[in-house]
Amino acid sequence: MPDELDGAQVLLARFLQEEVTTGVRAKICDLVATRPKELTRHEFNFNVFDLLLDFEDGVAVIHDILAGPEDTAGTERVPIGSFLSSLDCPPSDKLLSRQAPTDET
Image (cartoon, rainbow, N blue to C red; front, top):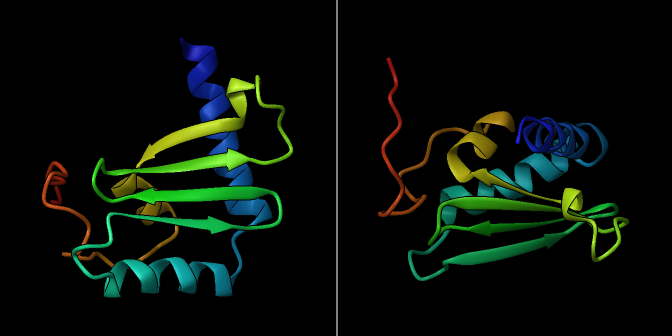
């Protein structure tokens, strides 16, 4: 299992390094800040990665589109709050009602 976790961290790090620009960050953060409650899922298609924000389940799914369909290391599920924090998105009350509260001290 530790190998899977290490791979997951690498995929998220690659997404942040290879795909996230000021414009991409703004697009994702703006969607979260302004999303209507009835929008439960939204998909972004970028150059190397597809990103699914699943507000209902509270996860961001990052998929490396260059990975083969059998390559399970090509997909990563990250808690949506952690994902948005990694993008430095401002906190939003529009995430989801089912998400566990974060402990901010």
